[in-house]
Amino acid sequence: MIDLNIVWFFLVGVLFAGYAILDGFDFGVGALHLFTKSDEQRRLMLNSIGPVWDGNEVWLVTGGGALFAAFPEVYATVFSGFYIAFMLLLVALIFRAIAIEFRSKQTMLWWRRMWDISFCASSVVASLLVGTALGNIISGIPLGPDHEFMGSFLGLLRPYPLLVGVTTLALFMMHGAIYALMKTEGQLHDMIRGWINNTIILFIILYAITTMATLTFYPHMVENLKKYPVLFIIPVLNMLAIANIPREIHFGRDFRAFFSSCASIAALLTLFAIGIYPNLVISSPDFANSLNIYNSASTQKTLQTMLIIAIIGMPFVISYTISIYWIFRGKVKLNESSY
Image 1 (spheres, helix red, strand yellow):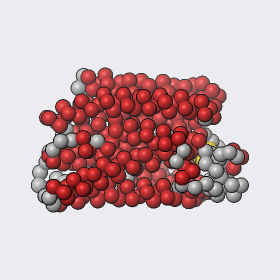
Image 2: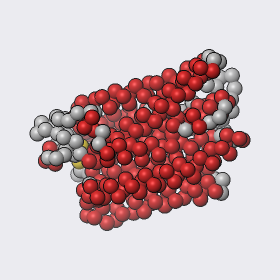
Image 3: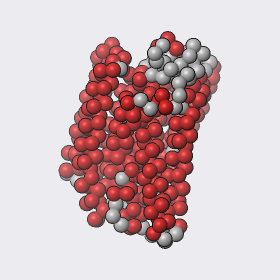
Image 4: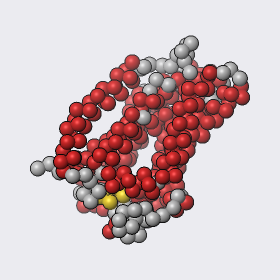
C-alpha cells in the first residue's frame, strides 16, 4: 500500500520548490533592479521577467491549494498564525505586479523612479518574508494542544528566522543575477556579469553562517540525515551545484549556471524537507503539539481523490510553464509592446 500522506508531503514540497525556483529569480531581478544605471537597462531587466513572472505565481497558488486539500489543519494554523506576515507578502506581491505594469505607462522621471523603488522594495520584502517563514518552521512556533498559534507577529521576528530570511534574499539575488545574465546582452550583460561573484560570495557567507546556527541551535534538522546516511548525498550535490556556478560563468555558459542555481535551490529545499519530516509545523517549546503529515492530514479518501486530480492537473501546469519559457526563449529585445 502507498502511504498517501508521504506522497502528498512530496507533492506539496515539489510545488513550493517549483515556486521558489521560478519566482525566486523574479525576486532576485527585482532586488537588483536599482543597481542598473539607465532607463533602458531597467526596462531590459523588467522585460527579462515580463512574459513569465505572473505564470510563475501559478505554482504558489497550486501549492497553497494542495496544502489546503491535503493538510487543512496546517493550512489553517499557518495562515492564521502568520496572518500579518502573509498579508505583508500579499501586499508586496501586489505592488511588485503593479510596478511592472505601471512603470512604463508614463515618461515622467519621478513616475518611473517611484515604481522602480516599489519594484525593488517589494521584491526584497517578499524574499525576506518567505525566508523568515521557513526559519520559523525550522525553529518552531508556539502551538497549543488544539494546534492554535499562541504567539505574536513580533515573536516571529527572532534572530534565527531573520537570518534565514536574509540568506534567502541573498540566494534569490544570486539566482536572479544569473537569470538576467542569461537573458541580456551587450553593456548590461557585462555589468551583470560583474555582479555574479559578489552575489555568490554573499550567499555562501550567509549560507555558512545559517548552517552553523542550524547545527548549533536546531540539531533536529540533521536527525534524519543521521538516521539515513544515504541522504547525505543531498548536501553534497548542493555544494557541487553551488561550486559549479562560478565555473560555468567563467566559461560563458550562462544557461548551465542558471541550471546549477536551480539545482541548488531544489537541494536546499530538499534538505529543509528532510530536516522537518515527518512534521510540517514544529511546535516550540512543546514539541508534542507539532503538526505532522498524519495528525494534520485529510481523510485517506480525500487524499486518494486529490491524488487523481493532481495526476491529471499537474502535467497541464508543467506543460504551460515549459511552453511559456520556450516561446519567450532568447535574449530580451525592447519594442513597442515592451514594459
